[in-house]
Image (cartoon, one colour):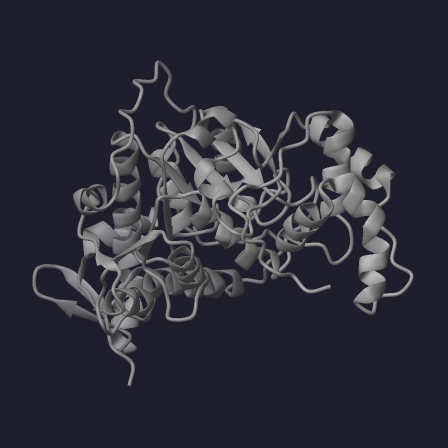
Length: 396
């Protein structure tokens, strides 16, 4: 069966009973039925129940023999699993389903969520970028997220390492949405487990179109990205390689008619190449949060919360792994040094960065970082500049 885009501007009415909801889920979870096929079948047959009855014949006409729809027991188990973890389920057309997301052609028929579903009704801006972000990129991402939150916008991102993480952290007091590639209860990457819990506990939400308990696989991430951009009025990209998931999100946003905005970077920094390409191709150049606010419709003024998030995480950093007691003498130290070198190189780029700022970003002592900097300088990988500044040596 081909996934054809259903272009109707009047989606079918949402399910009104639990039986209707089960029918929707059965249709959506049936083999080879994606969101666009789901909407086409509903448009052609009038209801999910009628579409389920017709589906085996539709499959046979498409050359798929012995086709069985999703068993009702599978859907009932999914609903029970959602109830066990305190998740909520909303369908396209229901009051809490985000209007911007409902407007895209391949809108998810259902969304599972954990947290405060009211956050879905507020104005939203996506903030995405590199997983291996530089110190400058991380500070910029967090500053933009804080500014957007203060202006009343909910920050949407994908809970990945790097820019996604600081986007959620910066917006934690004002509301943020994490769009999951797997089930809403499958917290990936594992180091963001505490952050994921705090998003849901502090007025934000985690959402996903995948079943409860679904482990994310590679093909889920591009489809997740369309939800990130679909939820949002605009997509801001902070550091992204020329071939990256963030660029996929930006391209999807353009297809959805969303505003795309990008923070420029040094031409010799591969982590900025995607942003620079977007700007070359017409994306709005972003220097600060005011540039974003000028490009988008105003959001409602943020509420003054009488509570603050219980978690005040530092900016993400990968501390050197602790040596294990059974590590042979010397080998653990070498591994730690190599890990610290990698962290330093990841944080630096062609644009100079102050050494004391780098030490603070790494969360390590100057006594550990300074010898590592000397090693990298002697190795020709970094360059010291006047004023205590450091930068990467460009590779030929």
